[in-house]
Length: 335
Image 1 (cartoon, rainbow, N blue to C red):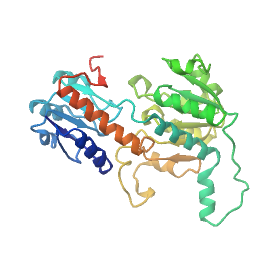
Image 2 (cartoon, one colour):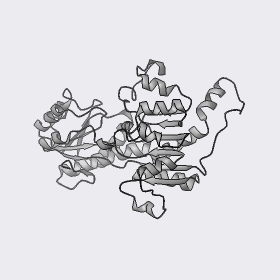
Image 3 (tube, one colour):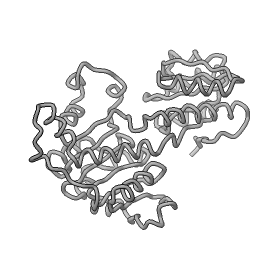
Image 4 (cartoon, rainbow, N blue to C red):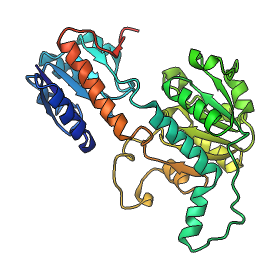
């Protein structure tokens, strides 16, 4: 049995070696390159492939994998928007993903963004670097007593809601088309998204990027929010309309934003530039130079535990499929 791994990062090598040691019956080979038409033939001789990438999986690349006799495909992440499910079905692939690699990692990161914004950490950092150690006028505010709106209460959103409510003493409200039974006893759910937008001082979004949810937070949604609202996005960049965000920041409608994801982050995140100014993207430049915006390069998930789980869960599922067993995290590509 052989599994070929595409797009392996340096930080994933050690957990992959740990998995190999625990599964000596499986031959594993890998490349740092993502799966493309040019690299697909590297999987020749494998029974399954495991991949992760920010670029779409091209039909031709999948066809090559299929022609190599491979039908078991696992991804090491939760996002599936890089696939056209028709392609997968046409070539007879079975697919697994990793829906939960560490909810705490992302929820904690979102809470840190809230705290840094409300305590005006970027402004204090600039003052400190210039030798200015005076407090005034950079006064912060507290999370305690604020109304925190949580959009999406799955694995990550539910952890974030509990951190805000029980850790910081916030008044948490939530909206989800499919409420989480584990949270319903807290009485935090509101009936509509509009109600959440209108009542929240801080809004954090934790939903997948389904086509219907593209630009869920657009100009109309922002207009319904309180003046001086704070926005947090550690989910998917496409959920938030960047132009509407910039307009809201310019008008003061939005007091600050914490962004771990951006709609056009491919080509920026996971790359190194000479400076922030060298990034040729006017929207990124606009946001990056604001004292009330914090951008982290899609690192909310990035912890040792999460990377370990991404490797182990995807490899375990791929091995299970090859062995004719039921995988833990199968994806229904026929929906």
